[in-house]
Amino acid sequence: MRADEVQTSSVVTQWLQSAGHAAFSAYCITAAFTTYFCMYAFRKPFTAGEFSDVVLWGIGYKTILVASQVMGYTLSKFIGIKVISEMPPNRRAMAIIGLILFAEFALLLFAIVPPPFNSLMLFVNGLPLGMVFGLVLSFLEGRRMTEMLSAGLCASFIVSSGVVKSVGRALIVDYGISEYWMPFLTGLIFFIPLLLGVTMLRQIPRPSGADMEERNERTPMSRIDRSMLLRRHAWGLSGLITVYVLLTVIRSIRDDFAVELWQGLGYQGTPAVYANSELAVVIGVLIANGVVSKVRDNRAAFLTSLVSVAAGFVLVLSVIWAQQRGHLSAFTFMVLIGLGTYVPYVMFHTTIFERLLAVFRDRGNLGFLMYLADATGYLGYVLVMVIKNFTAMEFDVLPLYMHLSLWIAALSSIITLVLLAYYFRAIVQPRTVQGNALSTQGDT
Image 1 (spheres, rainbow, N blue to C red):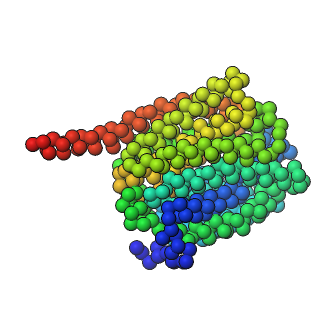
Image 2 (tube, helix red, strand yellow; image 1 turned 120 degrees about the horizontal axis):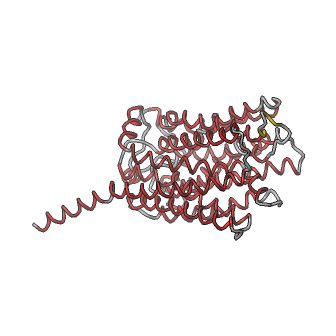
Image 3 (cartoon, rainbow, N blue to C red; image 1 turned 180 degrees about the vertical axis):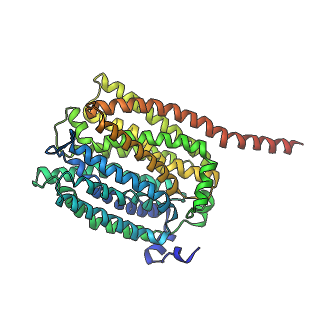
């Protein structure tokens, strides 16, 4: 271990090293959930506004704001491929705080600078925020309980998006706060809880010897390490990342345009619906990931996660079919299609890449694979936003979302089935052949 990787052993760290699985998991999930939940208060509140007072180039201003922030967030993901994969453990906590302060300053400028020039401030806001997830995930990866811990982390971005929208909407509707000042004030509300979460993360000890034995040691990666990993897994990663890109598109539309989707479905209720619907989604996602996390064998868990991804897409197709025939209420539709989208999406964060590294024992870390997928995924979403903004066609959000979800779920189901066959041959059949050979030798 290099000198810059030495971890200060606090009283809390020493307690965690000897704590039972339940206490250790509860602590880590609380720390990760709190940190990333609060990060969303610096990223998503502006989407609770409508910004209908400004139209630029014939395009609604909210669409421009979403595209601006997503472009900054996407660039951040590409930067993170290198930064996160190389980040020494002892620098993660301060890096998170620095990135959040940078993002909050951009929100202050968003409130001060007049439109349309303040749209650039959301691009600046997205630049630091894209790297926070990888830093938080780095505290959790490479452990026997990583799926459970990561599921708790992922629960934060499902629930928090709805909560911070509800908070932002309440500031506008109930307190008369301007749509332009609301994002900055929402960030201020969540800053102290974020500091608490980061302080807790900093106390988490490194993976134990037993963790490294079962899940492989996770180390910072050089350019050569990244290149070797990509060459070895070129075909499989191409398929996995393609599915992730398609998932990111429909997940992001549902998240960024939730207000418009609810309005398109005819819902006229209170802002609390954004939080309530996502709470129902997160319960289902945690159950699905909890089942997979119980599978100890890395090969079986990896293949099971791909089956779960395919099942999520089948659910999306079924929900769209039912909605088109008027069988679902607005709330039921948003919950079920959210479940069908988030089960596969979260499975990538918690299990697929984690178990892939564990199965093949490659030198590397989860942050690199996640940021490679995330960068590509958000680039795909940016392209959708560009097409939406700069074509002569007019898109209502709900029909666009329904059609994209239908085609993406169908295509992704096919790709996932092909990946299942590919990886079954790669990791199960060789093991079976080896076992048969040993059995034959034993009979001679």
